[in-house]
Image 1 (cartoon, rainbow over the protein chains, first blue to last red):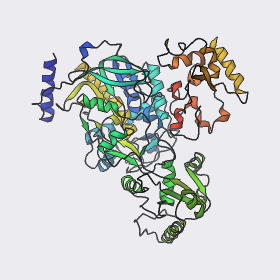
Image 2: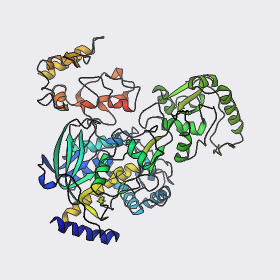
Image 3: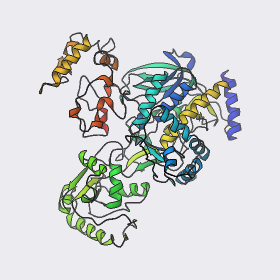
Image 4: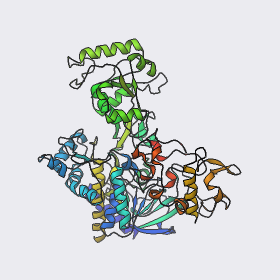
Length: 506
Length: 123
């Protein structure tokens, strides 16, 4: 049985990739499926409870795939999705159409993603996702998700206004609704369940070794149980931005001084487990950083919104020498690299400051909440600014004088910044500190269009093993556009349920 | 029965200034616990720890007396902003374990404090 299956897989691999057929079949030294005493059995097990996991679970239930169990290792449902900004790109969404934007289409979105993907994206996958975008939108509406009325915006890298946003501007508006709908329809959710290992029969997954009542991040907590999966295991465990060792292995520029916008659980150990059992990884070193992070708050935070003012209306200054050091309006990668050069002699970060005129933004929500939550401060003069952040005053004054002279000329001779939105700097100022944060992993497990995980020897799907969302790689290529991750996760949750159903009938 | 007793205790302590229902005090030996749970300690560890002191406690023990998360009152006048309601979180709502924010034997910062560092202190 086992030999015959391996033979068939190798045959399929040769047909798909034309290589690898001569390699011996995998023989990993882990627990053998036939010796396991199973504690529980379910038809489908979903690993992770963000957009991808919640959508997969709900749609699996609706496709009639049987008993569905969602395992979440943290003490809250929703993963990183619960804390994200709640942006969702939907071509031809009703708000967009009401705005009179009739020339958008799934293909227009894919065009933008091909540019940001720098040729390394999976265009067929992006097209499939874009073509099902309205299904993802409908899933939200059906489960009671509320979006901002009349709000549809053009966000970075998109050629059309097509990004809608949840009512409260958090992904939690979506995760809580998907969770509640799933609960009502019979999906079972478990918190504090950490996946220790996969139980394999050759290249087929048959169940999971799970640490129950686990307390992140202590692996000694809880006890081990074995859960059998009759039909499928769906990996929806997200990225690995919080795994400092792993991200530095694949991109040494991402050193330990970089915080992360993600929830604490984005540590990627299930990706490593999948790789250990033969799952093929792709684009692991493509990791996006946000140059709009503040070291004075955790996670994604408010800084991003504050700096959309700061980078347009203000300047960024090196605290060690009091000088500007970058084009504040350059792209994420350029700015991140420039910011990270600001270091004390011992290599620790010398967090640069960004400041802009207080009086021009009185009552602005971005400013009010940033000051309230102590990630930004009001200073009454350059003297106070220099004193509070230990900046050489004489040079700081000179920097501001020189900059102000260039504002009416609309030219930045130092860094070639676009000056169309620049204003003359006049105290009092709003000032904050900046340092890049790791934001999103474009890389992960390689799947086919149906979300089946490919094996690294045969390049054929591993039986009953599926992956969706940020856990997967190769979809976005070089870099991902804002508002497209939520779309991918919700849509692939629909598609993976359809795939499993068709695989059952095959 | 226990739930009624608990609610009475909570309501009573909400309006008394200094002493808080959840104050961390010495309970048994070097083990610390919450003053409002003193009566539970008299029965040993098993009540909360799944029948054995060596097992981790789960939400089941909390829910038995306090009820589900969305039914537990919070003094809304003490919130930094109305959206910061920890029992009706915009991020998690029903999908949060009690243990994400509450710890019986030590002080703990709630999960909200991972990002909103000024809204909630250790408790």
